[in-house]
Length: 374
Ligand code: PEP
Ligand code: MN
Image 1 (cartoon, rainbow, N blue to C red):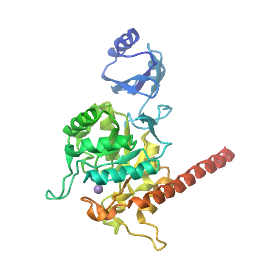
Image 2: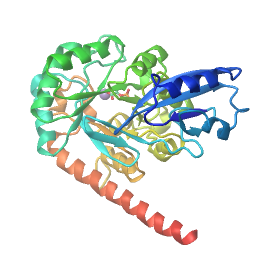
Image 3: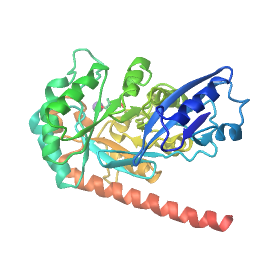
Image 4: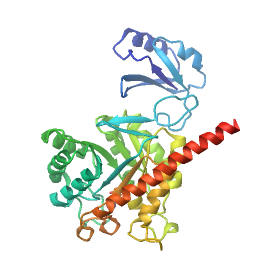
């Protein structure tokens, strides 16, 4: 059960202490207090964990300082959607809104290789009105002999160039908690010209200690990729780890599943789950067509499979697209074969817009139909 307190109440106020002493009398109930940084205000939420079935929502609502009460099911207590749950399904970061109604494109390099590639990428994004990108500095690789990413050494020029080209948010995978400090330090040293969304890759979806470390900080939002060989429920619980440690700014990423059933694509595209994740949770949903499809194959009409997969996710209501581009894919150190070319960026964005318009049109048609049926 979650008690959402009135806006002016926090752990330092008198009402909070009165509430605490009421709650202390409840048997077998543990309390966890969270500060939720909203767009206009910070709200305090008290989670009651344990035997809450016996508690009445009305009784809890009448306690000092309580604004409203959400009875949560066992699943995804914090990030889940529950009955009569009017908590928001969006957050703002660096002036950019991420929600279940918005769409943001993160086109960029799978792996940072040189300042020249980074600059060419960022310039193309800027020329096309984009303010978000992806830049891999820490790469989890199948072989220990493959390029592992430039790590913290590339951060200063990546962040400087982001500032130069007006990039506000960079999605960047981390594979160890120490990378959070390295990123924070580099952002500070380069004058905080941009922001970072920490990415947890599919190989680390159930790295619980990493999830806890990333969840404990609230400075950076998180993109959590679905685990490629586990159930959706297991991946959603992984997201809940982040929230249970205090960070609710979480985006859930679909990136295809590892099964030969998807051949010849690299992974089996799972974008039909966009609406499933939106129904079960309040998280915005990202699609990654590059790591799903994994090649530049085209349909007989000439359209890239990556663009078809993107359109499928967007027409179903996806909120973020993570997609690999490279100025010279043959020279890319990671995942060159699936990278789109910089001169394909305008066409890609246009195709995304067509699918987004179609989604919006479907939404409004559906509202007309459901109005008629009610
Ligand atoms: C990536 O986005 O660079 C990546 C490695 O993705 P995933 O974790 O989905 O394989
Ligand atoms: Mn990759």
